[in-house]
Structures are given as structure tokens and as C-alpha cells.
Length: 99
Image 1 (cartoon, one colour):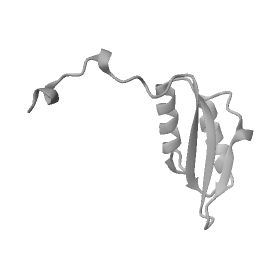
Image 2: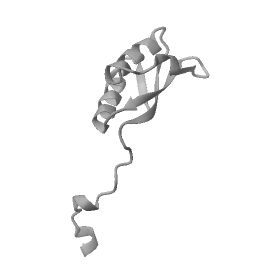
Image 3: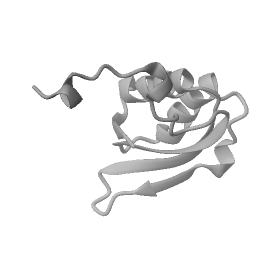
Image 4: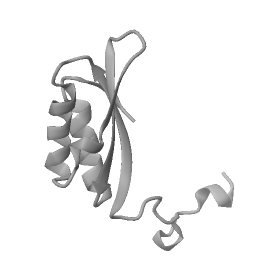
């Protein structure tokens, strides 16, 4: 192994974080078609972003009509908040995946 590969990263040399908080963070949630799809997911989002405006969410139906997607922009206050929101959305019974 070369000396380059053995180098231990110094915290001072780590790259800057990609996101600076707080920031607006776009997300897309794709899930099963259900009458209360948007309402259920907005409730999850509002637990993490109490000021989230549901009127700004954009819902679309898939080409075959089997799935719905909900495009949202959340006010992310930290990486931990984003991680917890993402996990809560992924864990929801209606969700297939989150982008």
C-alpha cells in the first residue's frame, strides 16, 4: 500500500458540507395511490417542518395511474432533521421511495 493510501484524514482537511443550514430542500415522495396520500405525508412533514405550506406541494399521478408522487420543498434546519424526516417518510405505509 502506498503512503497516499495510508494517509489518515485530518478533520481540518475534510471537504466543506454540501448543504448550509437552514436551507430550502426539495424532496419527491412516490407511493401507492390512496385518497389521503397527500394528507398523510403532509402530516409527517409538518412534524419536522411546522411551517410547511401544504398548498405548495405538487401531486402527480403516474402514467398508468397506480402511483402518486408528491413534490415538496421543506425548510431544512440541520442534516439530522433531514435524515429523520427522510426516515419517517420512507417508513410510512404509503411510501415506495423518497428522492
